[in-house]
Image (cartoon, helix red, strand yellow):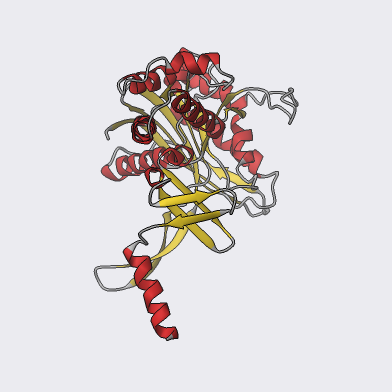
Length: 348
């Protein structure tokens, strides 16, 4: 994975003497160095691999009924547009962004600040702007003289407030609903909302829903094709492998490409099948691997029981009886069998 970093900068968001959050601006970009290159490359890798991202665009926020709710916050977009047109330098643009973030953070009691990192870089054929609020984490280091020193490092592994704008897609197709991606908060949490608000971003494409619809379409398509069990699973595997590859490259799922993958397995007209059906699938959309994994595996947890098995075992090693609400497993995994035998031996 090779990325070409154009410019990157860090601004510090911290509490001032009056207890209010303020943004301390760096006056120039980060110096070109191996450390700076490694930082941006690692953030790109971690972000690309992060599951459950949301996708959106700059626009007017909507209420639960999908109707406009207030006015668009265009300050970040305006500054970014000026930067891309050459009216603002990168440092000036990021300074405005830092001030906007500080103002937004000041509205919340939970806000503690951190380091605002903004990086412009290119990867493959696209230009990106990466925006993240990174938290410092205390650590201890040892000097050459064997002295212990306290220090801080950026907590990259716990990146929760981050977004990436595909500048190439945004400039080529401003009507797109997915040129801006962002880390979604954990279920039931809205802590990340302020991060989207400061950029004026609204969610556009529901990637998880699109992936669920794709999975439903594949199952329906396989069922109407009257395939045997092996052929049906081969079709599911082909779709999963294609989508997994797209995820690894940071690319979207293209419905025509999915159709081509199935055509290679002798299953034609998947694209027409989904177009004729009521699936609501976009022409292309981001992959959600956790959803699509259900094409390969069955898994579930509840009541203190966790079960997971390859989809190909259903009806063979694993038999489901919907009437009795039971799963029968033939051939217990060796490590589980060992635990069961140990427990049985202790009781005897």
